[in-house]
Length: 191
Image 1 (cartoon, rainbow, N blue to C red):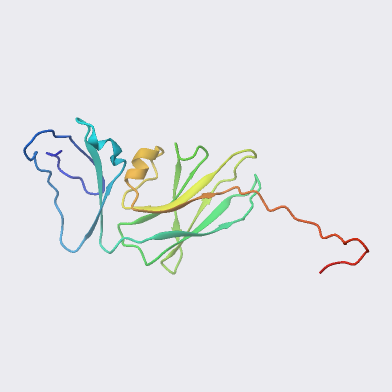
Image 2: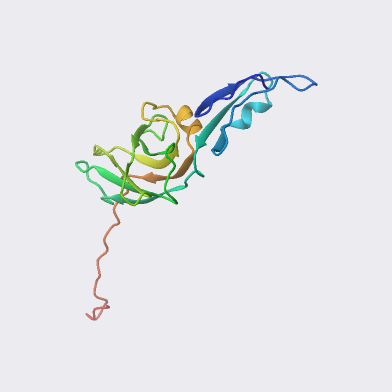
């Protein structure tokens, strides 16, 4: 594989090379005092001759954050209620990083991306999923990237350009079934 100029904050298709010698060199231009995160997704096909690979390189001015989903309000939304998701990063993000909520009704084959709003503490973010009709499924995840993902819907490009991600959550969980306390035979109530 080789001969490509590696794009920063994007995906580069690196062509395949077959031979007994070293192939052409790839080139990348890096700057001092930055952090570079490299992401290779779906490497299973690389053993097939003639198929290259995709490489995403993302640049930040501080170590990339990790992200966690910390809550959802309401916990059991009705079809008329928006769903607000709260997420937290382990440290304030660098100016290059963006925090997103990604939600889907078809297991992330297609997605909706919402850039999260920061709070004043610099590590807490929120984003809102619109009300979901009865009978819908809706799953979401929280993620970061150095790229503006708001225009993308396809899973392949979003996955390639994800810097950090946390879990898959059900936005529409089934509420727990309440149970009744009954009196045992003989009429004594158990507490």
